[in-house]
Length: 532
Image (cartoon, rainbow, N blue to C red):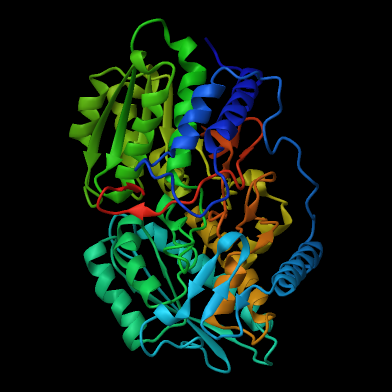
């Protein structure tokens, strides 16, 4: 069966309807599902009750408000939205309380500053003119292109800082001083580097890249009560506002992405014959790959087609120079669906090997993770036309390298910001991720600065936990917000897209899927690698 654009649009709607049901079941409480699953119990029950739901219902995000068409209008909109956030926080008395040790927020959000490490300061890392911002990430090794996220992010922060945007209610006007350290995507290196940032550099806040690295340090950062915003990873563990209130993510979680893959498979299974359907995956042999694999297995375990599906996975080391052996093993299974659960240079391994071993033509559906949604990994300069026809659940992230974004006011602005900083936006899709992250941090710093007392660590985390803005770097229809103790994920939506080598970009199929506020919070149990 040839899947036409009309058929795909229907399929996207089916996914939207089914996944909303799958992600529902949250009760607004600040606890995990308690069953040790990556996909929580409420989600599993909702999926089982909604498979085969009518496609007549429009999917979330199918209608969207018109967005500004020039930067002046964008800035005016954000200023209005920031004021609304500040007013809500003040009206509800959220933030630092009169006792000086309690922080309160919406829906049960609470921090006891009395439990912070001795000598903790609400303003450490701040001077009258600067905000000291520390980060670790891979500037070398197979994941080194990810450091372009930080480069793009800092270009935006510098832009706003030069314009005096970070003026606070205490009369301070600051710029952001970025201190980046290379951990080469090795968590063993991340730990001492974070120690340097917090004990020697004495930064105001810390950011990390990569699930393995962030998991190794987020306990310490929360125990030390150090803001840990926008972890550059989609691990569900960052959605824990009660036990890890100082840590937030900024991306679609990998478990929701895996749920979308599973829903896609169920919606397409009728095209794949009446016998066994084989699904193969190449996964990173670390926490990143493990959470994908576990979440996908859990989805398959409750799928109405579970008795027909044969799932196999091969593992690749993060620093591996090839995956020939793994891909040869997977190709021998003649899969109907193949998924890359990897990031960094290994994104190219599955694509190139599939073109060599016959999977490109013989495997009907091939997916990359949204971490691979980057011209440096899937573009024609990286893999020729080998990625043509591959699919992605793209996390809603707009592609700064795509010609299809030409003329978009914010994208054009971001490209100019990058050029002014000395970067070529066409060389890496991760520059676009950095633009989004930098924009978000710039907005939250401004919100925090307008709270009573000006910019402080407490005001920053209060702002983060209650922000609701229109994010220009996301596909229209996908929201960007958090809500105290109940909604701990900024992004809970995705577009479905397919790579077109002629256009050298992913082309969106149908309306985006938005699940804002539907995901449960996740108190991650590292000993069991699951939500507690």
